Image (tube, rainbow, N blue to C red):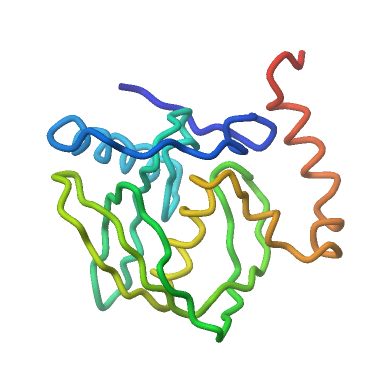
Length: 172
């Protein structure tokens, strides 16, 4: 199936996604489709609602030169988050051209399920922690501009207004 990335202004980005209930081959294929869309757009992560599907499903590639980390996760939830924070310059496929430093917990403990329904406990830090938190925000209807300081968000105001205007349903 062909999916397109929904951009800021599309109301689906603000909706909380529904839990994944069906595991198996169909979910494996959905994760593959999501990875294809993510890679073709040059991203590191993608949430299902970013392609118009209200399911609690995310994919990510937080690989570095030292390790390969590619995951498809269903129903991910943060169980624990460190008090220590990291600032990392983030971008988002739903906000093309906008990058900003976002403060997030340095490490998180996450429970999720793989495509076969096997429970996973992931202790993530560094880039993996950032990407997982960003994508979990998406399936909770939270976008990365919500994490910007008011001053930084104001600096992107013109770009955000233009994106929203172009991507709000019914806009001509």
